[in-house]
Image (cartoon, rainbow, N blue to C red; front, side, top):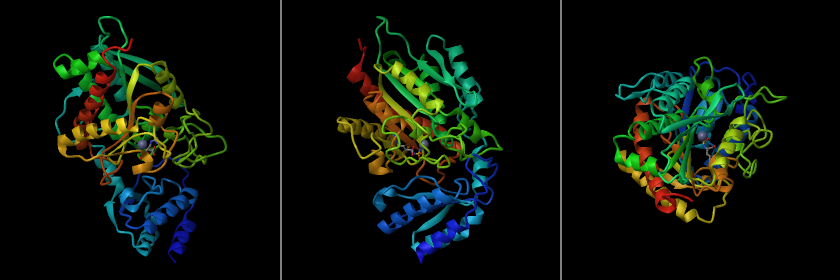
Amino acid sequence: MRWQLLVALVAAATWTAARGEVKDDFRGYKVYRLVPRTPQHVDFLNNLQSKLEEQVPVDEVEIWSDIGQLSPEAVGPVLIMVSPEHQAQMTKSFDAEKIPYEVTIADLNKAILEESRRSDVRSTSSGGISWTEYHDYPVILSFVDFLVRDYPSLVTKTVLGQTYEGRDIVLLKIGKPPADGKTKPAFWMDANIHAREWISSATLTYMTNKLVTEYATNQTIQGLVNQLDWYILPVVNPDGFAWTHNETKNRLWRTTRKVNPYSNCLGADPNRNYDHRWMVAGADQKPCSNTFAGPYPYSETENLVLTEAYLARQSQIKAMLSFHSYSQYWLTPFGDKTFPPDIAELKAVAHRAVNALTSQFGTKYKVGSPSEILYDATGGTHDWAKAKGLTKYSYTPELRDTGKHGFVLPPEQIIPSGIETWEAVKVIADQVIAEFGPTLD
Ligand code: 0X9
Ligand code: ZN
């Protein structure tokens, strides 16, 4: 009976909107928050997910995070975005399955409009950017240029290459050369490999601004910049990011924007496109899937230029954070149920980092590998950085929140996210300095 409802749901689905089409508004869309309580609930959601992936475009119904084969307690709440046409059938199938659920976003379009306003919180502004609102890519680029121009002895910029649509992919270096000319350990941070996860680059630019503009006045920061080189790639996927920012495009876009031969669906999931265990788990070969791993590893320029830049600095980089949202997880390697030999050390440092984070505002984070607390997924940045980049402290932080707003986080939360995440970053930076500093030669 229950499965019949599911079949009815997918049978009713139409192929009116392939992934990649303009999605200029989400009027009438709702986001449901489900709390699976039994293994049957988890099975139901997994089945629903595979049916949806096969038959319903992701901009009509999308489970905002994969489910995986975890126990119900470990899965936690699951958000499902549903277009008006599918709501009756979806809620009917939730009821039939007796999964507790609530509407967490009653009007997604309104939430998106709300998100794009400026918050009332006061913030400094730097090079045209502030942390009271989200900014489009050109503003982030002008912020980068401002830092380079106003702090030339501290900041340098490298254009790593151009995206499919011709945008610059930009890497910043923040650091003072040591007096003896030796090589310092380095800390790599990147964000927005997934286009819709705006809080990731907003948090990263907040911390970048702090590192640069407080150097002269803040002793802790002076120590961190003198003893480490910081490599910062604020937006890994600028084409996707730009697509989420333009009013007439799609706020919930995740992937890159490259044309795929023989498909109407654009782009690939760049967090499945690296060549460490490519296509082994939690990845798809269908271009219309939001976890499409690409036709082959490094099919996406964004992945290629990132790894080239990373490998050129490989012996220096001792910590890397690839920021995502949402869930409040501090993910350790790897995404296929395996662990690096030094996992105990990585977890111990991650726990210290999230404890420092929590001490600011009480925001709680879970620590674990994707397979332990999320779902299996291979081909992602932090797995690649650990296995191929040989970076000891390699993590994917999934930033705020835990599912009240999901990807559409109100701008009031940018500064608190920046403040608390910085506390975690400092713990890891101190660890790197204690373990590898002051110089590597
Ligand atoms: O699915 C992902 O790519 C990440 N979650 S998200 O909701 N931001 O899309 C988790 C990636 C896990 N990372 C690795 N296995 N490296
Ligand atoms: Zn992500």
